[in-house]
Image 1 (cartoon, rainbow over the protein chains, first blue to last red):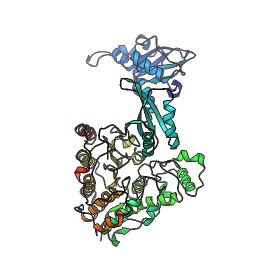
Image 2: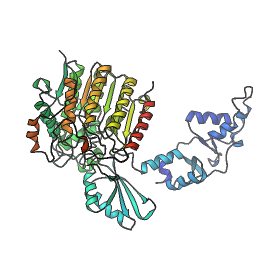
Image 3: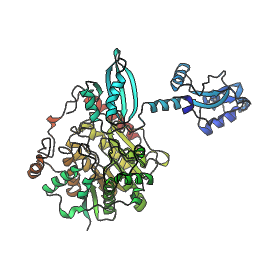
Image 4: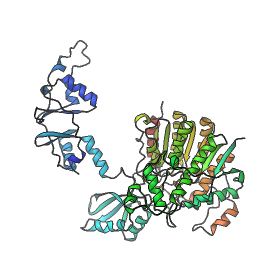
Length: 216
Length: 383
């Protein structure tokens, strides 16, 4: 899945000369946590987070403090250079950036111009979608030997039953590199015929089958 | 004079029939009805015939294009390219002749139940043909074509303007009804079901709480697979009481799927008849305490149609009609008539023999997890 498929294209941005006070208002009004700072050519030159702004604001504990700090220009506190991504990057790649860089928002830049934003939350939502849990479905987990060609063999069984597959995940079986676990979300309330077919074909199911004494 | 209860029934309910091998089988309604007749608690005066829901009534919840598609499918005229879009012609909801008429009658049954209760002719009404809670706005799903529960509640809202509490004890999440009223503060939905981690439809998390003005009026208890009676009833009773106290409904509509039993082939919960004795008792008690007795009960899932569903559903009627569950042995005449048709041995008693249940190694953990879930849900019922 590509960044351009999930990015928000209505982006709130500010020029470097905007005041901290204005930035604060925008963050609150739109309930967002990051605002990219762009120059007149719409090129990203910095980014501010709600935390940057909070740190720069006068403490509420100082009663007689004037709010001079809030009149400062945003470029005095913005972070730069900014890590940006491209609309054709992969969602998996940006997950890695969020993880490695410990940031929560990424401006999307094309031909040096700001075209979108992605937050950590958008990315997590997309990953949830990829697991298929948002469509009505039942789950089946199959333990298979880790050899080429095994997935099509298992899939053939699903294909015969005319049941739509909402998602497929593949993950390693514990620490044993000889096996993998295939997780299928299938769009049916009655997975019994497929479960039977899988068992008849000799596959071991992790689910349903994960307790020592199965249901009668 | 107002009756205690009405039994909505027609032989025509059996026309909601996908095919011989499909797990959804309305023969269970006949089995239940006869079990009650042989027990002498269901008599001629109790029956009310269902009416057919009009297109306008179906459209209280369903998209008109979808209703048209079902009608076409009903006549064998739905183009194959359109089937997928409407969830028709799938393994779960195959097309059958007359499906529109058969489904409209089930919906009509629930509307008849509403009218019986709200026109003051009866305190409680039971439509075992209803409870098809997975049906979506423009899609058939999970054996359900038209969502009679959602339509009946819309009908109550439109014609009687009452606040409705919908309680769903089917082992699958009551998603169709939840989404129908997700933004509605006058309809509170509560579903207890096996967690969606494995089981269809996958939703029904404790954090699904409604949106906009409906926020706070959607409750879910997604209990662990292999949950048994004690834990089920502990969390269910506590949640149901708290939610009813919080919402103070004018009427209670229950969906009484009977697929949380250990014999049920489609789910992984491990209940016994005990939960199906307590569920109607509790609904009955709370309906009288909060709603002047106004209670409508619908059917739902239930795929062990011989050993589980007839007893479970009959207990709803027993409670409605006699204010108590039946105990002891089942009528011999009923067993005698049906044993020859059943692939399994029919039960002898209204209750289950505890030895028949599997030993669940993780029982203590399951109980603990369910309790945590309950604590999470109860936070939301504090006014």
